[in-house]
Length: 447
Ligand code: PHE
Image (cartoon, rainbow, N blue to C red; front, side):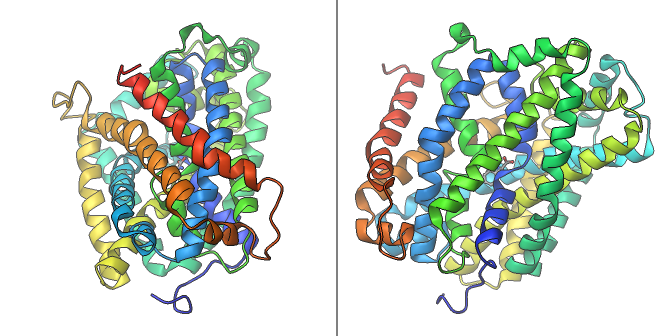
């Protein structure tokens, strides 16, 4: 497809907003706090921050540069530069479809909680045990969560077929500032809760004694998941950037924003967890049992709860859109299909997998893969294997195969190299791949 015909986002601010819309989502507010809670709190936070800075940022810049240089989807981008490396693109498309499948399930939960904030006494109950029970009852329900996941899939589909510019940009522009504001208000409120300081200590005081090779892999995987990198989403999005959009400026802002939201989510969750006597290692249910406990202590609890879950739904939606878009753009461009058809195919496939993932937490609980439910295995396979592997290969490609002049042109369109260039290149060529290799080797027990 030539450049003229391809849709573009409206400029610098839009590029930041849509990329941040992809990055900020359930990864920050649902996945990050529960992983931190299960893996030592502060220690996890420190490793996570190091991973974001050392690998996440250089990798996002790398993916952006592949997108702006080729103006193609993830597979097309690699193929245009070097046929053999198209396999990294294929891996990314697979990861996108698999992530979307279980992501829709959790997104459905947030939609359900939003509806219940308005209609039921979800937030009027002050006893954490009742929130645990309510969560388990909902997630295990034979059909309700399935319906919510499918509705979410449908909403994503509609925005995708409305087109890149109108749908995605409009959705991202409104919600981001409001989400940030509400998070700050809630964080302050949580820290003022009785016993909240204990939670703050847990989250901010690193205790490295519990850190294992697996903890490091989990933190790195979470960094990729949260930044939407290692699977070509950012390649696809950057292919829509307007000429002259700053690659490294956009990457830096998106990374900072995404990290800020994750840290704020921790500051909202952990003080409340300790204040209400909830177990920080509760796993994927953590946010869903902690948030209602927070809201129940607030005046106008239903109002806060509704606003918050509405924002969470929107944050999740801008992320499902980006996942869907990666797959749709691939099918549309590589299989030469109409956008409508490509989107329909993507929705059907991921919708079906989402139904299976949802049921695997309820009536299909007994069926497990290596001891994990289908839902958990999708999560584990993508975040801890496919994304780090995709990231590793992308670094190798951009560092060693991608024409260095073409790379530099993406970063410095006016020809004046910035001072950070040699450092960045060194990170991409050596530091990132070596760190990722060591983490893998360590987890496989090779070193
Ligand atoms: N980054 C998103 C989140 O944190 C999830 C996502 C992962 C989106 C990969 C696109 C690609 O919720």
